[in-house]
Image (cartoon, rainbow, N blue to C red; front, side, top):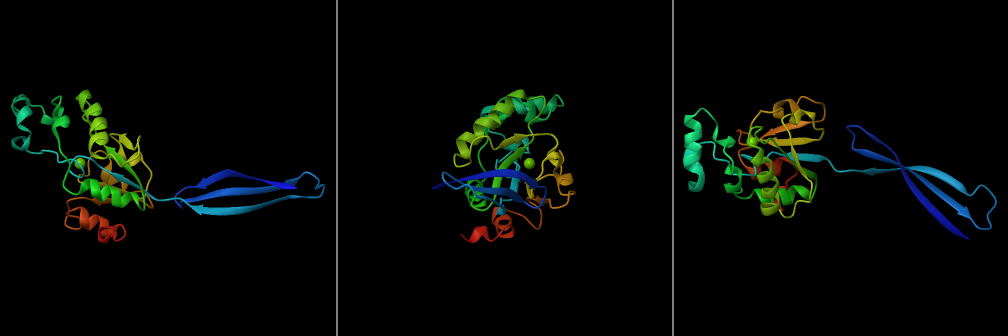
Length: 205
Ligand SMILES: [Mg+2]
């Protein structure tokens, strides 16, 4: 006699993070009686943490004087013409990580499902691909396809959003039950160690 075991996912209950499976065990080959049973098995799935890029993981130059020398002049010209320097093609390719950010994301991944949730300037189409390449270069431990570019961060469902500004739906993300906006750079969360401590003493590891 041998046994066949099949797992079939029958649903995910929103918010609770509980994934329900139905378990079937069937006996066959010589067993003509019932030989069939089912029971529910619960398994916990991990909470999702979204992480903004600019000002949280990426050292974005909010002041044009802090822009990389190679592209600063173009940015100054853009500012004088009334355009923000984030709209200058190539700017995002010059940006470097914030100190400790990559290591912090590694710590987060030990406990959470981590996705980057960033907004790319609509007028700067080049920035969209720069961000994709940036992730591959500076966050090699992050699994592929964990970058979400959106102007409506509030449309994403998850436990936490770590973001330095309320813009593009970041503040509204925290209006949903079971969700929280962690205001990076604020008095409560001035830096990565404070965020890691809040999210489970991860800074101590
Ligand atoms: Mg930001």
